[in-house]
Amino acid sequence: MSMTRRSMLAAAPAVLSAQSRADKLKVAFIGTGNRGSFLLRHGLELADFEVVAVCDILPDRVDNAASAVAKKGGKAKTYTDFRKMLDEMKEIDAVVLATPDYTHREFDIEILGRGKHLYAEKPLALTVEDCKAVAKAAAAAKGVFQVGFQLRHDPNRNAAMQWIKSGKAGKVLQCHGIRHGGDLPRDIPWYFDKTKCGDIVTDQGIHILDLFRWAVGKPPLRCYGDGGTTLFVNDPPGRTVMDHYSLIYEFEGGAQINFSHHYFDPPGFTGIQERVFGSEGAVDLPKAEFAPRTERKRIQLEVPDAGKDSTYMSLAAFASNVMERKRPLNDAQSALEATLVALMGTKAIYEKRVVTWTEIAGGS
Image (cartoon, rainbow, N blue to C red; front, side, top):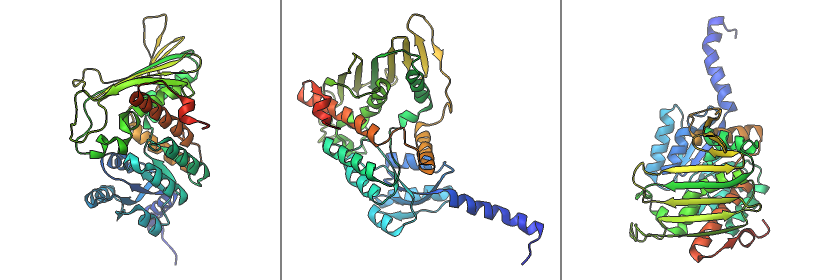
């Protein structure tokens, strides 16, 4: 059957659309609550993603996620059991996982064992042994494994880190961080149970600690800290996580991390600060600014992709890593060290003593 020029032109969009779909990664989202729905929203903006399935143990969340996919012109099958989903949908290429922290070890290892590419939210796990088990599974996996330390992909922070890594700030001497804000959202009960979230260093502060460890370029030698709950005592009822702490990490060569984190900051009073001080000057990571040590001025750094959301950029990097088989910036080994740094700090706070890296990491 011959085709006229007009019929060929009419058919072209359908052909191109089919080619486009074939080139996309077929992606499933597991966990579509607070963080998961945010990831899904950005994932639906990626040209390289075709969301084919959504999964959550709560049916209303699954329905909301499927509706979000439909509004973007897609169609996602719905599941409340991720194993059943993976059994039935062999065509899934990649998974984006955003389930509670205490599920990470089990779910990560299962998905990696199925040969899927995996973008998994931090932390790696809640114990040293479980973290090492996930890292071991990732090393043996066929798929790409990227962990959700999205601040590494924030345009400003990434540009600032490249400035530091280029040596323009000189030798890193000290990292100073503040994460002060209001308390955790009351509608997510597991946030307040330290057996499920690992407490607030591991669940929340880990992002800034990861950036600072990246800046220094190696794990710390030792850590000391203190913290507890002084305002939100048994609020909400049964609360076992802290509402404040401070940590000091020391590194070979004398560098330090000094980090303060609390949940009773007045709105707009302190907020978040992440600054790296070097022998040649200081770098403000969120602002992508450099201040020479001997001059009273600020230099605005060049920022590729300025203004783009860190989660979107992190997912875009994941798609690129999968399609080009590249090693993620936030891979299993990086995530292992970041999570062990957080566990190290938590142990120091709980036991009110100096904790060493060797004690925590052993031979890792």
